[in-house]
Length: 234
Ligand SMILES: [Zn+2]
Image (cartoon, rainbow, N blue to C red; front, top):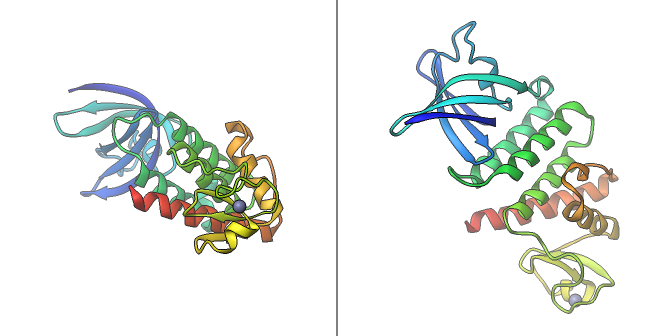
């Protein structure tokens, strides 16, 4: 029992009873499932801060087996995510992924930082949503301990003629090794550079580039298949 004061971001919400809701808050130290009593009553002080995607400061009461929100102050509501159906769909998918890979009592400081930066870019810019989602997935995989090996061919060590990303090999393969790997996805040199950049750039710079549609399709496929492969293993 006790009071917890923490920053966090609402990664899921569901209705409970007539006026209450359940929310999942991703905090810097894991996710917490919380009841928000009366949050659906008109004029409730919890209404704004318990909306999907909201980033805020929460005061949470910890009972024996449950948590409930006492009060909250909103910091960022990412309003535009709810005004544009495409943005809403991408942001929802990203929060769902974060929900799948996080637990209670876990250091999630950097995942929370990645999530809030990703939602900010989606909400406040016109950057290609598929590219933003791909960058998010690759960085998330790195934070979860699945950083692919991208400096040279994971099989023979060659650092020229990199033309494949191998899902089974956890990284790039050259033209000869990738050709006989059933899990290998073809990648152009531009996509190779982009993946290397995403992995090595400082957190605040990961979204600072653009790609043509054809390369976005490649990076989206690689990140989607690789994430699915790793998350299903857990
Ligand atoms: Zn090779």
